[in-house]
Image 1 (cartoon, rainbow, N blue to C red):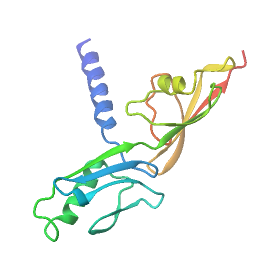
Image 2: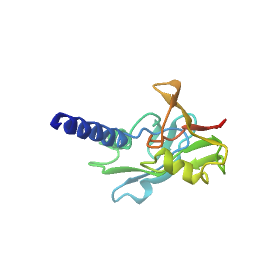
Image 3: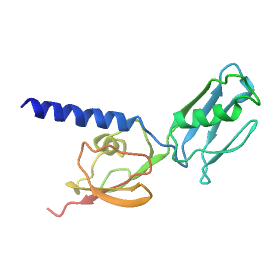
Length: 171
């Protein structure tokens, strides 16, 4: 019984750790600031190219990086030539959306929220329609550059760019 508790804790811990490893993508909006340098503050939406413009640096590739990795990339770019010890902070001001369609009241795209689960995503879409299946739900997601469709349940974590399909019930 004790090993089951340890296993549950480890699974929870892994899910929390991976939730913090959000990787930036096209459509995210980031705010970048350098402490005590008002001219080095930008709020920019990441385009499909994956590059953002930042003062004193060439375009910076940010798609697929965490906010911490972008901080270090900008810090190292400014270090020495421009600033002695730049303190860079990068935060996400708006996440890219997720999409839900099928048997929900208001299908469409919705802004992602950190920690979003499928039950909350359905609620954002106005709930299930009368004809919705209680269990035939799928998510199409890009994992390591490959598109995958997985069967999900109410507790599944939703990610930005996910496409959720709520099927129709036949009974």
